[in-house]
Image 1 (cartoon, rainbow over the protein chains, first blue to last red):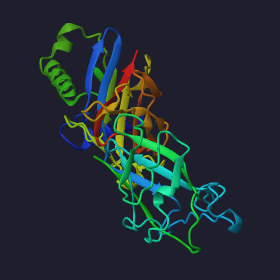
Image 2 (tube, one colour):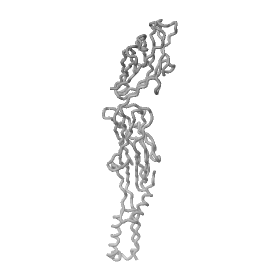
Image 3 (cartoon, rainbow over the protein chains, first blue to last red):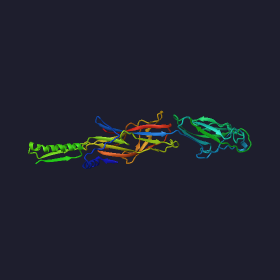
Length: 196
Length: 189
């Protein structure tokens, strides 16, 4: 709102008619001075941004959905040692899982575990998780290799200082090096991102 | 006959009172009669010659330097959704000068020093913007420079502008509390 100063003068004259004295209200929060012919005043304003520690790790689809990567060798190819690529997952084309890691909490470690104990896929000992090869398309966000014992780790590359901001697609491949009994063998792989 | 005409415009009250007292003293002493009977008029021209004045107030005033906080939740860090400042700030600017010698004053801001968390990490002040209620001081964002021109006004005006502030929240920064300040300069060359 901009007011011509003449309006203010009129106001003060009216005040003078009704009171014994008047004065112009002083402006505060100023520093003023004259430097040479220049008149200058300053005022300051403080700014504060509060950033908490945080860690965001997303693997696969959002929400409660747990994606499934499937390996389905054809009957004539079972055990022929020709690797079978996994299908499904959240990556474009359904050939893996998209991974995003964001944090400002320092060096992040990614841990891979499974729900099968030492029994591998299906917890039957028939197919070892070590027969599944995991790959990442980013050297800055590598995937831990899968083992029956679990708890394998990798470290994400720090982007700047304590900050990590990495994305990758992890893909999987079954070695198909042995002939096994027909059936469906499954396991849940549990990935955990850990800050210092 | 003695005719006294006194023109009075805006004048500090004590000066007016002094002039009236002087006038009564002259009349009581019969000075005019004694000096010269041909004097028919005495004219007092008492006018306020406005002393050039610049004044700026940002926020509460006094010795207080107001602070605007931007509190980012952990779920929203760097997601591009702006974070509103904790309070609005009122700017009050005054420039006054005689109409015969008008002044033009310039409002600039120094935002060249980034916000600092005390551990070596910084956030550029240029990631903070403001929105003005009336637009007399246009909305914009800090340039991160030492002499960013925000507005100019020619005497004599009083400007009152309210601003709200926003942190753009497009980047991830180290955890911490980042403090800093900007300095507004209101000057007439």
